[in-house]
Image 1: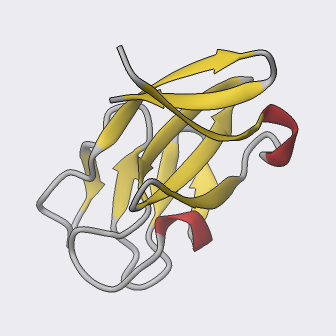
Image 2: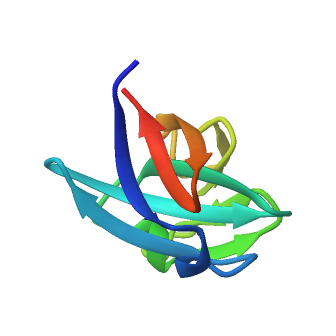
Amino acid sequence: MPRIPLCKTDDVPVGEARKVETAGLALAVYKVDGTFYVTDDACPHGPGSLSEGLLEGDVIECNFHGGRFNVRTGEVVLPPCMIPVRAYHTVVEDGVVHIVV
């Protein structure tokens, strides 16, 4: 399956998110308990950037209106969001985080 490299594992501190733009995608990369997760960066509810939000455990809070998403699944955890954010399957290889497309 094709993979898109995103960033080095060292680029994302534990408990934080980083925005990565590549291959026409704007993505948020999260490191939770040593595991990497990736979602679209744009909140599906409005102009918020999820990578600029507050990450608590495996839940990211949108910086624009406070909606929350599970970064593992993309599912809505707290409204006003009603549409899940797209979550990607990730693979770490040789110190680089990839998404599988």
